[in-house]
Image 1 (cartoon, helix red, strand yellow):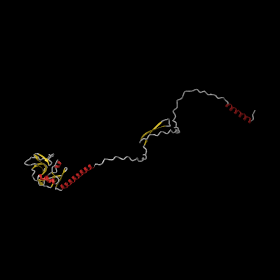
Image 2 (image 1 turned 90 degrees about the horizontal axis):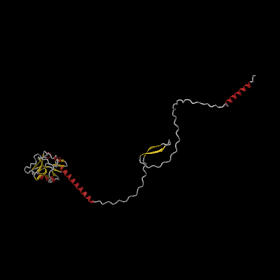
Image 3 (image 1 turned 90 degrees about the vertical axis):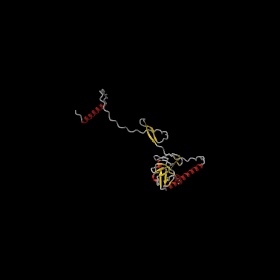
Image 4 (image 1 turned 135 degrees about the vertical axis):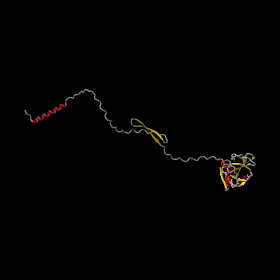
Length: 269
């Protein structure tokens, strides 16, 4: 028997709903898995990215005031908020600016009175200074006089001068003394060297200020002191006759000679 078309559709719809409802009401079944042999471990994966920075920690308490230090390197240490580590750094500390000058202090006590100045020493010093000035003036005057002679030569610390004046030994000593000088008497080779042939004008000899009138063979200067420098010619002194005085010849060597002979007089200052 053929059912009407709308009845067939209605029955078909109810069967479908029934099947769906029956499927939903089916009891759940547990599945039992039996473990197999473990597989080979896989390779390590790539490292993950860094995490974000954490929030700042709470500031610590204020530290105590440190001592004043001169310029130099000091070390400060502080706690880190990361994993409880302590970090230390060296800090270069410079001295501060100078402070404002303080007020002027009170005036100190009056010092003790000094000892009176002695005028005795002043007088002695002044007298000595005046004496040196007079000697210097005298020497300058004599030097000017000596330089006016036709023959003038420096030897060591002395100045020798002559104008070719011829006289005996005693006359020559007086002549030089009247000029404020002395008859030439070299005390070493330096003083002896300038007394050469240039001074021997009009004679082959010139008297020196030495003789052996007191003791034969012992020649002394005008002050009676033995000579410390000698420049005798070979075989001199020979003491032939009355040769008690000393003279210099053109070679610069010395000879003994009669004191009354008229020969060149050379003076020194």
